[in-house]
Every structure is written in structure tokens, then in C-alpha cells.
Image (cartoon, rainbow, N blue to C red; front, top):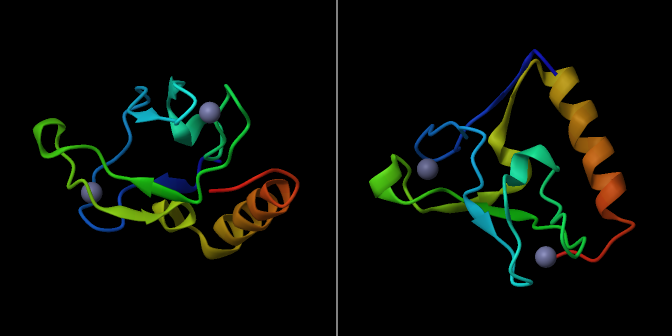
Length: 92
Ligand SMILES: [Zn+2]
Ligand SMILES: [Zn+2]
């Protein structure tokens, strides 16, 4: 994973490892630590919202996979694996 860079496709904000995302089941977590899957209910969030302006983001919503940047083959492999794992669970 060392060649993969994660950042907001709109404003280039980089996730800081903190739990900025909340599922509608109430779970709050770092969506990039689980490949967009809620650890509470297992729901996958195909779209990820950037954090608010007051913590450096832009609040824009982008496809989760668009946040991943890096060597194309590495990123494409990761995206394939993620999409395959998503196909087994409910998505939103
Ligand atoms: Zn959930
Ligand atoms: Zn942003």
C-alpha cells in the first residue's frame, strides 16, 4: 500500500486517520481504514464526503475510489479488490 496516496479529489485534503465519517447506524469511524465499509453494520459507502472547511476539507462528495491515487496498476488492483468485496455486501 506504500505507493498509494489517499486525498480528496476535489481539494486534495488528506485523511488524517481520524474518525470523520458517520454511518446511519450511528458508527463513527475512519472510512479509509476499512475500504469504505462501516464496521458497525457492514454497509459500504460508495461515495465519501470530504471533511468540513473548519478541519481543512471542502465538504464535497466524491466516489470513494476516486480518493485513491498512486501507481496506476497498484491503484487499479486495489480498486478491483474493493469493488469485488463490495459486490458481496449491501452498498449505499
Ligand atoms: Zn453502519
Ligand atoms: Zn475536499
